Length: 286
Ligand code: PDD
Image 1 (tube, rainbow, N blue to C red):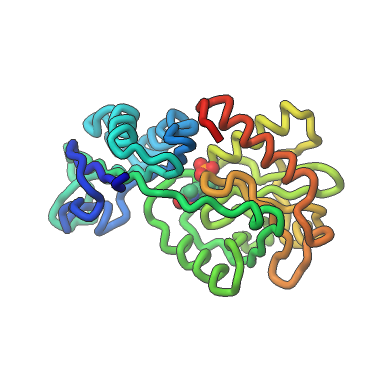
Image 2 (image 1 turned 180 degrees about the vertical axis):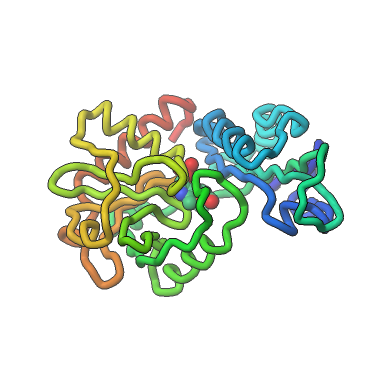
């Protein structure tokens, strides 16, 4: 099945998709994006993803009203592509203008999307657990907005992967841990699951929200409370949560072994439950 793209109303093979060189998304990162996972060809929580884009558009004053019905656009693209294990990348830019920092009025947004095959992480990766490396959080102040200004994120992830890790773990100047470069982060300290509260400092992840619902449903001890790097190093468990990995245990951070160096019971339980929610909500045959 072909990997397809959508560009401003047209669907074509990805390699044929083009946009203007004066698109503000390309020149300034003046754009928002979402990544939605397809299970058995069915999107998981697409509405929540698009709602998050709408909230981000309000923050940056990007008028989505002329972007069309984004859910309809993605549904059509997904049907046409017919891919089963895949992900949809959606990006809406403010539009095309001769380069100018000042945002002109009345621009028509550029809407692009792709559907690409997804190489699922192997079961072995989850059994073994992943390694992460800490990194000062040098991203902009509005991390709750899923903007394509991802230079700090790509530098962090490349740094961590270059050292043999899965992802970076960002921390603030005062040592407070925020999140990964593509993931939210949880840890278990003293038997209590903790994660950074939502607000401007982290992206309100859809997977994070799913994990929080599961924690509540299974009545697991939880506090929406930030933690420091020092507390994280002493945690019995640490795990990422994001669209690609769902729940990914972290068993080593820098040179510190986390817990007993193996994925813990909390992360394993949440990963299994996450899949059950996906199957229940999408009807995917997994
Ligand atoms: N990233 N935090 C950051 C900084 C992210 O970029 C992401 C997602 C998340 C997890 O959000 P969600 O559960 O909605 O995927 C947290 C996507 C996957 C990406 O940039 O490819």
